[in-house]
Image (tube, rainbow, N blue to C red; front, side, top):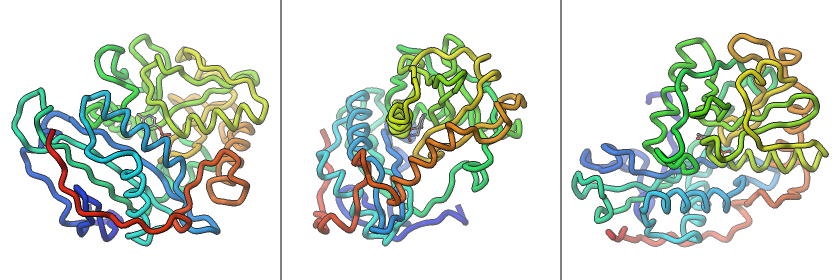
Length: 323
Ligand code: PMP
């Protein structure tokens, strides 16, 4: 962790503490069984200061994931929203990544942890392009993973739940071992699902395809943003099952994600996609997306929350209430 870009404060169970003091007990339930939910948000450095992208959809998804695992978060939507804003502000960050997490703390080792405390933390740190600085312009080389996404009825794929990321981690490690920047994971039926932390869009003959929620994907917030941009640009966009072989004959492919933003894919399994570099539709979506999030174009979808425009909130010290 030597090179990790730590910031000063982490909000942890109701108050700000120094980064190095935000620690947990080794008996923490989530450490053993993956009983956590989390979010990943980005703030952009705009002419109006730090602006958080899609704050409310992220907070909604956070509560939705917690609901799926029957874990009541001892704060409400407005409190978590404020804490996210105040965490960016307290650390004097502009362009950064924000990570809220809620998890079952120590209470015992039962697989029914509903009597154990729920702990909540929000931290933020400076962050650049996730898949490398060249990725946004040049595209990335990826491979189809030998791992499958969790089957329906095994894990709630629509939730951003800690334990499920063992699956994503397998895909990421395998991709790196094979020299790829990222892996594409298929669903249990062999259809394209998503990257280890990205949704995927595939363009073929002027139609844009993206896997449906039934393909074990996370309902990505950048995915929703890209769908809006594409539809407003006049493209036909369909959410339907994507056979693996469609990847190889696609004109263009791109990933979407908070970390990956809009990243072109230039090869899959060493097969060159389209022209072998960023395609024109991908470029158009990137141009629209970055112009809005960087505050260079009107925020026509109301995606941005300007940290400076929100009056500073007093963050009260609260004790998390075991339920
Ligand atoms: N799929 C998975 C498994 C992810 O972890 C992420 C990152 N949150 C995404 C897709 C992209 O979602 P979003 O655009 O909301 O970041």
